[in-house]
Image 1 (cartoon, one colour):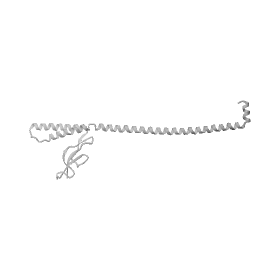
Image 2 (tube, one colour):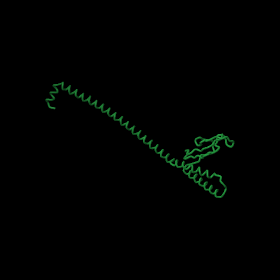
Image 3 (cartoon, one colour):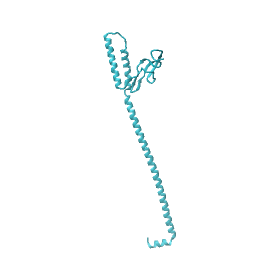
Length: 186
């Protein structure tokens, strides 16, 4: 500052007051800006936390979906041959009926029956290999595994037990492929 300006400032107290008010206004604006910046920082921090939480949830959802799909895939592979196995059941039924036919005692008939019985045994071994088992019918009636088609009164079998099996039932990997069709004793 030049000498004249200093003298003018000393001589004019109104300018000093105006300068002070301007400084105070600048300080107040500065404080308001700082407060506004602080609010912006807080808003950004809140938004960042929200985005982080959303990311964590999305990642967890993705992992859950991935695990569920893996379980469903394993389940689908486990039971992939179910319809094929179900289609083979009438074939083994027909072979068992043929093996139980009573038609003469000649040598050719016996050889045919032996061949049918060997075929049935091969079927059963193949079934076991792929998790197909016969449902046990030497037990009490269980509606989860047996389908009761009739009741009979008999002294040969206890009441509530299976008296006769009309059609064998099968399990595929411990799931009912076809229930046994049975007659229950009264």
